Length: 573
Image: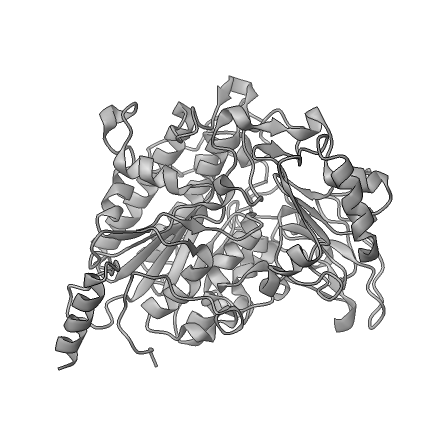
C-alpha cells in the first residue's frame, strides 16, 4: 500500500510539472553518503557551457565530460544564488549551515566585530595586537579568518608543530592571533566559535556519521560550528597563500608532475599566482578525497571510515577567471559576456573535470557510487564575466572606505590610513563599519556626493532600514556593517594590474553559481525556480535521513530543502 501511494503521489506531482528526482532502487535509504564539492567561482553558465559544449571549443562537444555525465543523472538548479556578500567565508558558511550572514554573523573572511578585542599577537596579515580586559568593555577589532591566523602563513602546513610538508589543519591555527572575547575572559575566538549557527558536520557527527572536509585555509575549520573540532573526524587544509614548493609524488589528474615546481618563474609567494601551480595545490585536496573514498585518512596512511559527509573546494577555476600572470604573459578570464572561456580558463575547468572523473571512478571502484549523492556548487561566483566591464577603481578613482577614513569615521584597524593594517573589507563590494554608528547618515552623504569617483553612480548604498531588512540593526548586532556599498557592475576596489575579476558583491555574476545534485537514481531535471546555496545544508540532512530542523538556520530562518528532489521520508535513528 505504501509503495502504491508513493507512486500515485509521484505521478500527481509530475503531472503538475514539478521536477522530481526518481529513485529506481528498492533500497529506501539509498543515499548513504554525500560528496560535497565547491568549485569556487563557477557560474551556472560555466556549467552549462562545460556540460553542453559551445561551438568554438572542442567542435561543439562538451569540454567537461565528467560534468556532462553527472548532469545526465542530476537535478540542475540554474537560478541558484550564493550568500550576499558572496565572499568565500560567508559562502561556505551558508552552504554548510543553511544560514544567512544575519544569523551566522559571517560577512567576510576579514570583517569587524564591535564586541571583540584585538588579538594578543599581530596577525600574519597585519591585524594589530591590542589590549583586552576580561569582563571589561570591548575595544572592537578587525576579525581575520584566513592565512593570517596560521602559525606561519608562508608554509603549506601553516607552521603546525611536527607536521609534514603538506599536512595543514587544526594545529596550524595560532590562538594568539585570534580576536578575543572580553565577555569570556578574553579567550580567543576560534573559527568554529565565530560562526553563530551549527553546521551539517556537527549534526551528522552527532547522528553517528563520519565527517571530513578539505579547504584552502586552516581557518575554514569553521565548518565545525556547533560541536567544535570534534565534529570533524578528518580535516585537511594546506595553506593556499603559502610559499610555493615542489610536491614530491604529486601528479595532477591531468597527468602533470608537481616536482619540480611546474611554474618556477611565477610569483612564488602564493599558489594563486600561477595557473599551473594552483592545480598542484588543488591536487593535494583531490588526493585527500580519493583517500577518504578508499577508507583511509586524508594522507592515505591510516585506515578510516568512508565518510558520511566529505568533500573539498577547488580554487583552480577562480584563479583561471581572474588572474593575469605577467611572468609568462598569460591571461585568464572570459572572451565575451556569454562566458566563452579563454584558453587558460578552459584548462582550469578541464582540470576540475578530470578531478571529478577521478572521484566518480573511485566511487565506482569501491562500490559506493549508487549510494552517494554528489553535490556540485560554489561558494561564490566572479564578476564581471564580460571582460570589457572590469574597472580597477583605485587606479581610476577612490573607494568608499578610503573617503570615510580620510574623514575620520573608520576604526583604525579598518582604516586605509593605517600603514601596517590589513586594510578595509572591499573587493567588488564595500563593507563599512564606522567608529560610531551615529555617523551613518553623514557618511552616506559623503558617499553620495562622491558617487562618480567611488564607482557607485549606478550602484546601491544600503543603510538604515534597507540594510536592517536583510541583515540586522548594526546598533544591536556587533557584527553587522553600518553601510554596504555595491558599486557599478564591473567595479572592483583594487589597484591591482593582476586581476580581471573579483567576488564578494551582489551582482549576478558574483552570485549565480552552479548547483547540481546528482545520483544514479535521479532523472535529469532543470529547475528554474530561484533557490539559494544555503538550501544545500538541509537538503543534505534530508538525503541522509536526518532531520533538517536540527540546523539552527532551519529553525531560525526557515531555510527549506531544495525543491524538485525527493528522498526517502523518515529520519535515521
